[in-house]
Image (cartoon, rainbow, N blue to C red; front, side, top):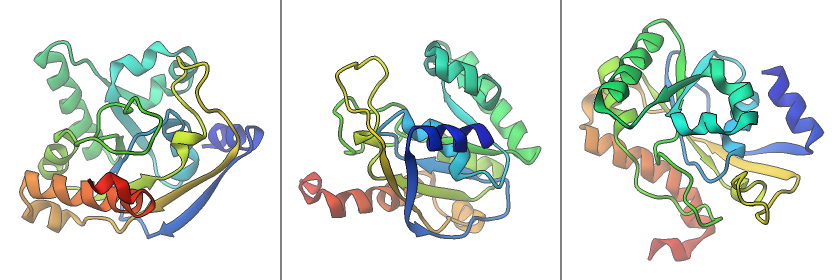
Length: 205
């Protein structure tokens, strides 16, 4: 979207795509690692060709700036009760059927360590992909963690620079259907995590 590209220009951010594989026909689910709130602000500029919504925890709307830009682009997941969480998933399936793609940060949170080390994926994105029979586009953000930290951390990193990333080959809807939920979760996690492990081999331990 135009505002995201303008924001990146004004803040002196740019993309450096290390791999940039073609996208499937929409709708699809984008699954990315989540090491910075910058991941959210950059996504509209990165994936501007298709229409999509974010599916994420409702707490993100507590930040005024994020709430301003993402209230209409967000399906909030209220995790306090199973009923509310279930309604969010039902809406997500409806939006996929209507042609909207979804962005899901499957870790469910930003690891609080100012590093790109990933934590295990929650399985909601993969259950949703299988039920909706849509492809998955894995994305790895490599450097966002050192460009912008949590808004509550006033002493954390905040600087212009290149957002290095990989847009991986998508997982087709046929493969999504053929793999079990556990196999699909592991495949996507491993694809996203491998460039991080190449850069930080100590994370393999």
